[in-house]
Image (cartoon, rainbow, N blue to C red):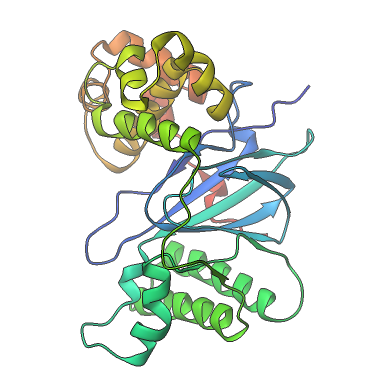
Length: 304
C-alpha cells in the first residue's frame, strides 16, 4: 500500500519588509506512514493553498474539507490545520503564507477602515474552500497561481506583482460577499483545541531546548497520564514524534538556506547529539542531512 502523506518544507523565514513565504508538498516525498501532507500546526498568518494533483482532505479546526486538483483552500489566522492525501493516490499542493497587514496603508482610507480592518480584527474571515469553477472563484485561483510563479521567477518588481494579486483576491472576495462574518467578539475555539494550541506553541518556542512530555502536558493544562492520548488524537502522532518532526523541519530550512555545518544545524534545531540528528533526519526525509542538502528539488515550481 502506498503511503499517502508527506512532510512539507517551507521556504526561508519571512523578511520584515515582505512577509511572504511558499510551502510545497508532494506525497512522493513520503517516508513514514504517520506523516501528513500538511502536519498539524497553526500560525497567525493567512495561508492560500492550491491543490495541483490528486485529492486532499484538509482538517481545519473541527472541520474536514475534501479538496480536489484545481481547487483552493484558505486558512485564516490561528486556525489549527493539517491535511493528507485522500485514498491512495499521489497528490501535490502548494501554500502561500503571508501577513495580511502587509496590505494596509499608513494613511487611513475607506478601503482600510471599511474592508481590510474587519479581516484584521477577525470580524470577517476568508472562505475556507474555493472550488475550481467559473466566476470569481476562477479569478481567485488564477491569482494564487500567479503569486507562486512570480515568487519562483522573482523578476524585477516581483513584490509589486505579488502584492497586486493579494489585492485582486481580496477584491473578488469582498465584491462577491464571499467572506464569512462574525460578531464583534471572535468565536472562541473549543477548550480542546486551545489546549492543543498551547502545547504546540510551547514546542515552537522551546524546540532548541530539551522538551519533555511533562512540559507539554503542563503547557496544555492536562495531566501527563491523559496528555499522550489527547495529543495523538488531535495531531495523529505522539508528542515525541511531533517534536522530532518539528525539529527536522527547522533543520531542513537551515540545510537548504544556510551554509551551516551539519553539527551546527543539529544544535540550532534542538538536537544535542549529531548521530541521533542524522538518524532522525533520515527517518523523516529518507536521506541523510548532507544528501538532502545536495539533492535538487525539481518539482517545487510545477503548477500543472
